[in-house]
Length: 251
Image (cartoon, rainbow, N blue to C red):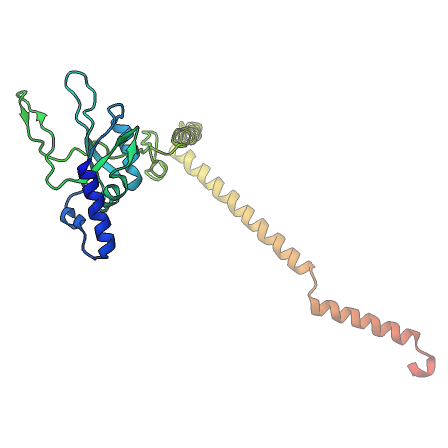
């Protein structure tokens, strides 16, 4: 509890002084934090949920009792972005979760937990584990003909994930069925028959194109221009005017 108060005191002092430098700068090379005071009923998933509001969690180490398997009440977290550690320390240190006060602080020199080697002895971990890094789900259906048809990656936390994957699979199955049906229709034809079929298809397309251009030409010819229509209208008016005029005027 004293550490919690001390961290809060330092933060308050920095705010009052308005200094540009911060005590957080000492830990700028570490993206890890220590979390103490955790309720032993909390799981790794619960802790990740609480702390992920300040950034993406990449790794979590929550020691458990070897006999009971229950958490010991503290954990080490690693963020994707080091700046998230500052937000977590400033906002969650001293917070109460399930009637327990959290202690959140930076970790400068973190050591990975040891793992069992080939001979059964505990050895230092060779690299980072990243056991909490979210995996992007990509529907790699072997029936897919291109990477584009597989669609964009789906976030595992998307509430619509299962529905989107199911719809994508249905669309692929339908596309595959249509393609196999089309292939099966002409599977027994010879190369000559294939060429003849393609030629008929090309001629059919040319006929449609020619017919369309003829229709457009007829439509254009049948439609009189605006100037031509105005000339006919003016001639009619002049004819009617001469017809209705007195004889002496006509001569």
